[in-house]
Amino acid sequence: WCFTAGITLTLLLRITPSVNFVILFILMIIALKMHMEKRRAIQ
Image 1 (cartoon, helix red, strand yellow):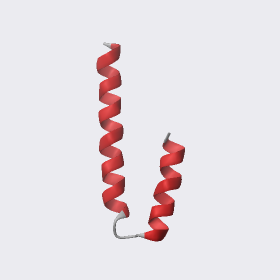
Image 2: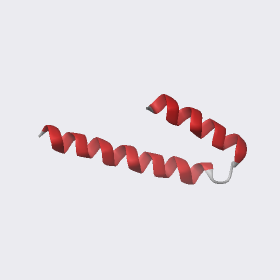
Image 3: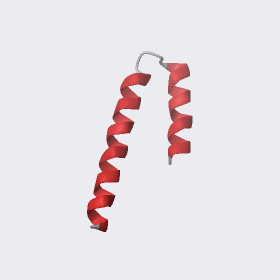
Image 4: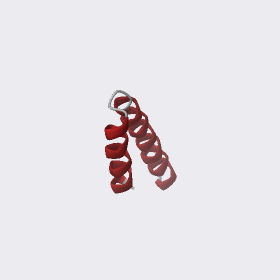
């Protein structure tokens, strides 16, 4: 998952260097939410 996200981020970096920071922030939030949900499910 991280690998595909990295590829998409690099492609977006080449296309729109001004929006890449926002996309990276959103991806980080989604990843954190998924991680927290997995922890809750395990417990």
